[in-house]
Length: 99
Image (cartoon, one colour):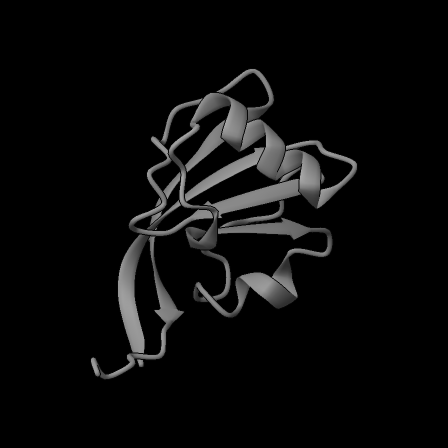
């Protein structure tokens, strides 16, 4: 199912996705990393899964971090990530019936 949600967007420069997750765990130990997406250049193909064209314009940083509802990551700048903003986007989730 597709859901319209508020998505937090950060930008920064990281040489590897694992370093983004390590940084998030340092600044927010209770973060649910299943609710976080890390995007490397080129951004457009992956951003298209979440936003309409042009929602997040081209940025100088190498890495974008998307935080979905439930991520537990406050939309606050860190020493490695700047806040781009919060945007309405679409996520796809499978709903599983309870046993």
